[in-house]
Length: 196
Image 1 (spheres, rainbow, N blue to C red):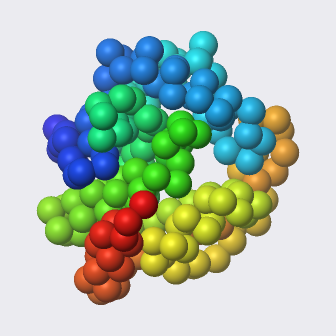
Image 2: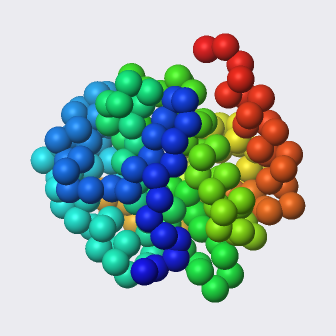
């Protein structure tokens, strides 16, 4: 079995279950909530393309480079997807990414708790030395969310990759190190304790 093992992570606002083809319908509904696939600066599957995206992520899981999750909200409704990706088992590093959340679940604390659960598992259970986050340089909403977590900007990879429309993407790379995790954990726990 590839590292890391399959796991379900749960808090009060979110539950992360290993991605399954059985989640297709709920994920398609979540993508329709806000028509997220129309955002030019990120890659969210269309409802019609959800089955192919699930297969793609599960194929990457089989290769040991991704551990994909389906995100459920506090009411048990599917709200999106997230992953550990670019897994480097030898160096105990992962990236948290390929994340998207239904419009109605954004700014509810769900994403903050998802990141708290994933970071906690990465540092406390998997003993990671660092966790990365990457986003389009021009995705201001995502960059603010990553910075709000306490991640530090490592740099921008210019002309890093092509987007679906063929344009070049500059990628902002952030990380949290194991040494920073206790402070970041306290910060995230404080954020999650604030009334919404």
